Length: 313
Image (tube, rainbow, N blue to C red):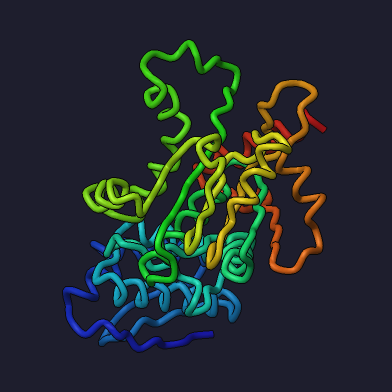
């Protein structure tokens, strides 16, 4: 079977970006999809089995949309879109999360991630559990930043419990701020993917974005904000109740964590597990569990998680 796709790229420069140097993007697509691909006279010709052709045509369309949206298509874009295709994701028009970086549109890589974004958009309170590398924190921050850009909220608050993973906080050098900064660093990392550093610093200085230890949340009411609690498996039941009751008018709350990596002292109840059980079934509260198949870091991360799961169970 053979199909021909009319290209929307209307110049040689755009077609070069679409195909890659020496057609390297098409070669990657050909290898992964198992089809024959050639390009001539403003068309891409795909030959192969019907199902493979359909999948390859979908990827070509994604390439073209990414080029139109960003004005460029580089190697990392191609790898990202091919990974999405490998997980059988077909993003709807409202799936992409537009953030402040002009080169960045955040899209789900897996079906689980697509459900996660949908759940966050639908509910005022969302719990998300799952192993390392599934994008729990990254996508929560992306939803928050996208809502800020659209003026749907006035503030983003990112909080983490300062619980040691086998090391004592008091042994770290410096004052309190220096001691807690390592715990908050992953939240800064996610934000840096969404906007330029200068803009992030400006928002931090204006308190439009706050990144704080969970303990600093006590006594506050947060209106018209997205409030994220990261690493929530390390909250106690008391801390979780305190955090949940900070939710104010026009706000959205997202709570993420990996319940297989609890660092609480022996005998303490995990606040995240406790809250999910107590609050299940309440309208406006969503709960989603990402799986090993949703891991999108280096391919070894998925193998590492699976190996530990086998040993644990």
